[in-house]
Amino acid sequence: MDSDAAIDVSALAINVTIPEELRWTDVRRGEEFTLSTLNVRLLPDGRLAAKAYGRPTAGGRGTYVSFPVPDRPELAALVDGAARRAGALWAAHRGLG
Image: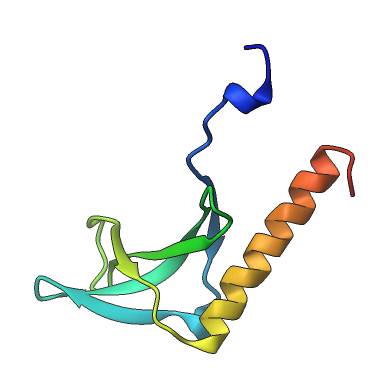
C-alpha cells in the first residue's frame, strides 16, 4: 500500500475485565448471566461503544453472551479509564509517550 490513508480501519477494540465490585447480572432467554468483561471499541468518528459480556451465573461452560452496558457513572468511568490506558499503552509502544 502506498499510504496509511488507503487503509480503512472500521474500529479499534480493547477488552477490559470488570472489577468484582462493578459486576452485575442480567437475564437472557430465562437464564441469568454474570457480566465480567467489557469490549470497548473506538469508532471511526471518535466515539466509544461498549458491550458487556458474561457467562451463565449457574456455572458450566455456557455461551459467552453480550449485553448492553447500563448507564451507571462507575461503568462510564471504567470505559473512559480503559480507553485512556489503552491509548497510553499504544503511545508507549509507538515511542510517543
